[in-house]
Image 1 (cartoon, rainbow, N blue to C red):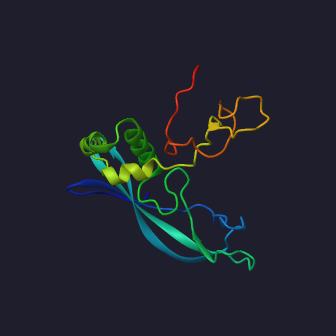
Image 2: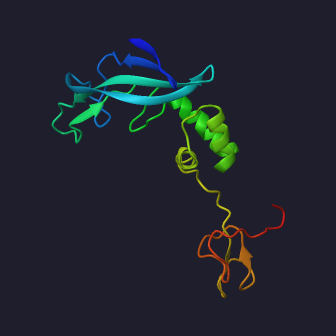
Length: 178
């Protein structure tokens, strides 16, 4: 941390990343040369009801391996920043929880009251994460003449395939016992 500044609307923490040279995300080789440095502005969780902004100076490094597709990359501060993000990881967690629990206008009002930098559109982007694998509960009509022990045209809960005729894709079908 280099300095703390008080402005009319926020508390600003000025910091610089000073760790050892990071590894290239493309080939995991340790960086040896600095390309340049620049300042990132990260919104952080509020402190005592005041907006908190982190001005973080980060370095861009060269990847010297000829086989690596990345020529340059930027160091990330563990637990604070990640690539292309304008808010800290802590604030991202808070916004995800608000978006999941409240969402929409209610989430926007809560974020405004808590001095969190987020709008409804921003809340939607926070909830996107890695895809959750779907359970194998799709049901289809069996075609006549199949040798699966069911009557022709019967519904099988384990068979995968096209959707039921007359129903839209993704429409839930009530199954007994579920």
